[in-house]
Length: 85
Image (cartoon, rainbow, N blue to C red):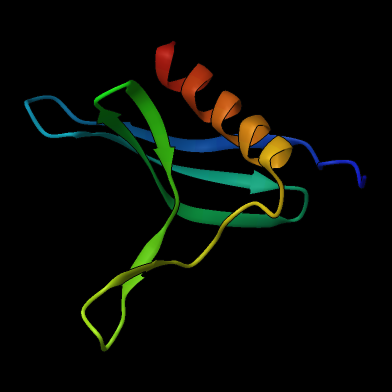
């Protein structure tokens, strides 16, 4: 399994209020920057939602996503830890 590059949260903007979206985050993974990740309050607690865009069919599709569960967990852990600070 390939090693996941270091993930750094470069921007985290928290929201006050009753919205399910609690924050937006931008991250760097190695030499790449990914914008538009969201910290969302779900029925089972906080989770990390990937950037997405609305297609012509009216559905929303992720524009970025980790290839493995392990990579997703590393990414979620990094962003949620920064959110908890």
